[in-house]
Image 1 (cartoon, rainbow, N blue to C red):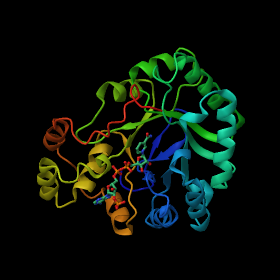
Image 2: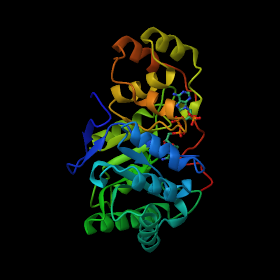
Image 3: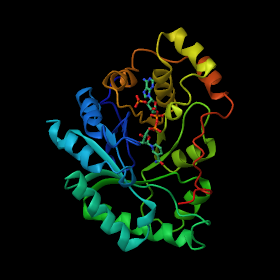
Length: 281
Ligand SMILES: NC(=O)c1ccc[n+]([C@@H]2O[C@H](COP(=O)([O-])OP(=O)(O)OC[C@H]3O[C@@H](n4cnc5c(N)ncnc54)[C@H](OP(=O)(O)O)[C@@H]3O)[C@@H](O)[C@H]2O)c1
């Protein structure tokens, strides 16, 4: 683990760069920020249909001059498109917006749940069937899920023919979801950490400030490094070229076991409030 091109290996052998570039809540500056990230050495970009920035992210990919095969591009199926036919159409639409002929990773953004339909389990199974079909067609190198906590994972595994290769979940100091992370890893998935900085909410936490100061790094760098030392895949987001560079400069220090334990012991903080059982979508 020493650079932005270091990879984890997915269950199907595909290599995934260990830090991704987050693009949520960034429409206006999505193209310039993604371009800055690629220039800074990021090779893994995380977007989603609902972020409404697949077009500018695609523009940055094409303007970067980096070979397509050296980039790892993820997008996600939005909740309104769950189901078999709708998923197939949504995938095509995402590729069109990104101006790509294949994706590296396609994720189910959120599981259907009991508040949206009593048939939530069947809907998730149909969505996943479409993902398997897309994967078998060769237009995506890996498929996965996002925000599938233990009950949703358990249910999906009853019908899945292909085990998801990734579960992308909220994971940062103050919010670790240990059962979901453990089950995902036990099933052979790479766990991606969304909001590794708690969407910015963890940056002034006094314990983190104290530990970061001791290593001579920023709290953002400490959080990214902490995710890596938990064998998760952080995806920090920034619009600032300086912070984009800083967030990936995490290979020159190692957090001690004692400090890892201190960070792990933080009380719940920085939780987004987004929960797969309770979202209105
Ligand atoms: N699957 C899902 O449901 C889901 C949900 C949420 C997020 N995600 C993914 O995870 C990515 C990251 O999560 P996130 O966007 O919520 O937040 P994050 O990366 O945890 O934090 C981003 C916030 O921290 C600030 N920031 C970044 N680097 C900084 C630094 N070095 N110093 C000070 N401030 C810094 C950013 O502001 P500036 O931009 O001004 O620097 C922004 O306000 C998303 O962009 C998205 O790709 C996925």
